[in-house]
Image (cartoon, rainbow, N blue to C red; front, side):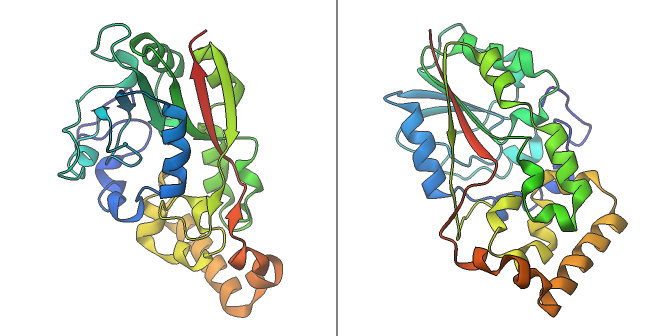
Length: 259
């Protein structure tokens, strides 16, 4: 997130390309949003860092969004505020300016995690809320059998949960966030019981880790999954997931309250 590219994207993934249909596949999931809203407590002013197209921004609070990617800013709905063109590592706000701050699916893309989290803590009076994934659990998902390099890239990118907590400081709580079967937010684990969705180019493109493998590698991975779905191999191993109401995967919410 600390580095802008010529096309207006930012971070370690090229959102000028992969962000084209991002808002179609990455809709906010209400049950995940409820967990985030609860963590924000009674805050009225909220900073959303790495805001993207605006997923999970609460509508009943005064939200200031920060997003360095022009492609992502352009996909923000008309009901949302215009995002500030800035990066986490250099937030243009005074100390203790916001009641709370949030960052969802973004810390793994920052060029300087330490600086970004310290900036969030600096400008926030109350809770700092970070939605991320536990890198120790990412590769336990069944997709690792079909797209090992994709999930290996994902695991490398996500910071350790303890590191995030230690950098934020204060009183830190880490919550496991269940993923519903019909999850509207199309990250990889959201399709735990709907594997056919990962055959869609748009669904994969909306998950930035797929951009770290070549098109040929991606094609081989998809054909492997397609073949196992057609011949029943996937269902032989994972059919119970098709009706599992919630999946406890790698999704975690870290909440830092001031000391």
